[in-house]
Image (cartoon, rainbow, N blue to C red; front, top):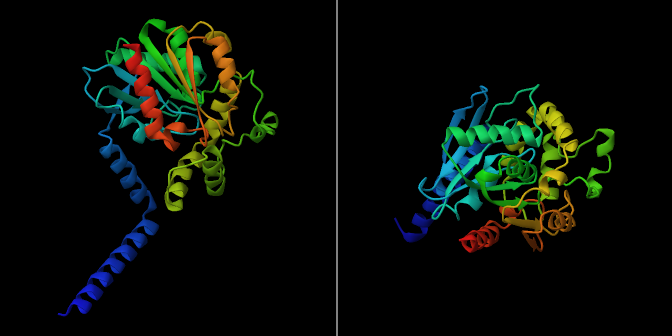
Length: 313
């Protein structure tokens, strides 16, 4: 076989392989998406585990790093899940033990229609989780709603929190809402996903520099949000009536606040409010970054966070 024919054969095999993988993805989007998610976890050294709380609620979580190291617990935001922290966490696990749970009501954790989902209720659940994992103290971090819950936890269980990481944190409802929430008072919440196209639009709105995800996978992710829309309306309503400002005043732990300057969901001016309520907080504002800095700039956020943690020592 001459070289030209050989290269043509290789090219043909590659074309067939690509077409086959594409066809497989189209016909089995769920499996393809889950494969990609599992691969990201494996690269980060994360292992999926679960536990049943004394209340009977299930919490599914990711874990990596040596349990002998100090523990970091990371809480995701509204409508999201534990995998929001997959890439960010891989920068932490050489020096820290990392746990990333699905908040009850989201992801693979329990979804109970008539349960409480305000920040205090979620904080109580994570306290039970920590007790069952025999964790005495942790560095606690949260994105958006996860920040809201983290502050509630630190206020309620101050001796169990070494430090806080707040990533575009929710709960500071004294700050005027952004334009995207104009119709929120009428009951329309842009974070509640009714169809695949809404999910894809929100993906681009939430982040200024979103990581590339094929639309096939975005549509697969959208199905979970669509299926959970009814419960998320109830959770949203409870959180909207649950301001965190008064409890934030009581939090004294060292706090790192990282905010995307281009956040279209929660105004960057919230950092001024946080600094007034929590004067011990260190504020970092990232240019060209939206609501989810740990997804948009995982290396930068991890670098800043590791420096903050090192300075605590």
